[in-house]
Amino acid sequence: MLIPQFAMMALASAIEPLRIANRYLETPYTWRLLSLDGAAVVDGNGIPILPHGSILDTEELGAVIICADIQPERYYSRELRRWLHQMNATGATLGALDTGCFLLARAGLLDGCRATMHWEVVEAFRERFRKTTVAQTLFEVDSRRLTCAGGTAAIDMMLSAIAIDHGVELANRVAEHCLHGGIRPGDVAQRMSLTRRSRIHHPSVAAAMQLLEESPERAIGVPELANSVGLSSRQLLRLFSQFVGEGPSHYHRRLRLEHARSLLRYTAITVTEASVAAGFQTLAHFCRAYRQQYGQPPGVDRTSEARRTPLLRDRAK
Image 1: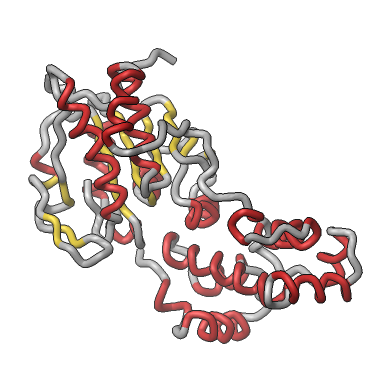
Image 2: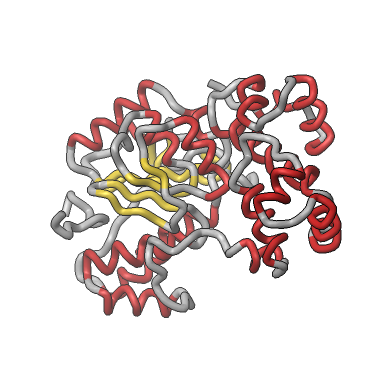
């Protein structure tokens, strides 16, 4: 099911392994692209995709996978909730690519489940849906639930499903066709280590950066940060400037604003609540810093209101 502004990479990564697997299957996988109303859906690149039909025109399905990206909850409705619960009642596997999990969770269909999504929106999801256990992994399989971080991680999720349905040998053969080095397990971390990502190998600076990344909800003063990594404030400021190119306070403010932006884009949180969640003392200070970093006020980004069973086989067959 395509949600407007979905990521084409995630969709293609999910479908292509199935298409390749069909070369070797007597009973092939089948799929349909659906939209909320049957009309064309424009992806994040501005490309319109014509679906096969509306969610209301579907027969019993083996799996339903929601593909979304920016502002998914904008498209939540009672009609969508009713349809998802109907699919769940018929025994369909429910899945999500990237931020599609927001819609499953909004419908109450991830309560008590373990799920994942793109690392950029993890904190926003945690703030919004506390009944779901969140993992920053490539993909998660929990009962009849499939959730994936999106991007090329969808290839690994589908390869894993093919292995469950038809065996590892076929899954490896499909991986080779995709020029995919191997099937990454679901519990692999999404992000590179901070040291590899930033190319900063000074242990104290890397430790300070890690602490700041893990604390987007409050401002951390230089003395507290320096004490945490065993440096003096003067040493920390000098090393941070040398290796990072900016002071720790400025670096952390950027991270906190990124956290606030994610909350505004992916949850129903207000601008004032986002300001508090990012550790700003006043709304005026938050709005000023936000405009300075993104060139627009924060309101622009605010959203509107046990047995190994087959995961993807077509139930109609």
